[in-house]
Length: 42
Image (cartoon, rainbow, N blue to C red):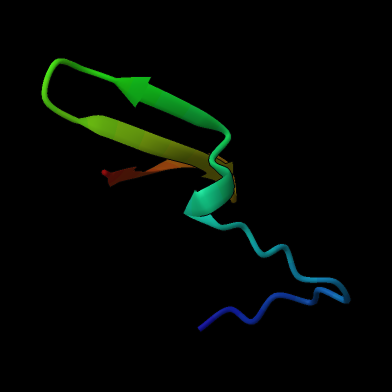
């Protein structure tokens, strides 16, 4: 198990998404951290 040697931690919330993708029936909130995109449907 790798334990990061961070002094400061980055905390991101989907309430303040980096990007919101809206489709006909659904919207996806996107956050970009740790070199990857993470999505939540809303």
